[in-house]
Length: 119
Image (cartoon, rainbow, N blue to C red; front, side, top):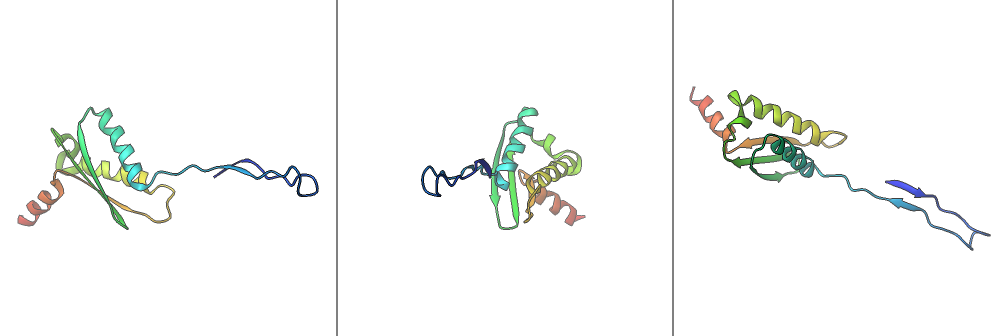
């Protein structure tokens, strides 16, 4: 909220009175922040990625699909974890109510969990 001009009372409180003028700027929601950040990262990496963002009350699930996305996963998911951490920081900056962000690339996290359970 930005005040452009203060209200004036005018002559005798009636004549020439002016209302205050304010400018209201809507802040991006968590899903919009995540979307903007990830699109910038993918553009810089020259990747074509389809994103599906599902927003719950306490979490934000982001599923990524596309060709040659192994670079986003990295070795044992380290790159994916780092990207998820950065998006978490961005989404929860200056927020009272935090949202947990989970990023998955073509079901990688579920496959990794199943592999670890077999060991």
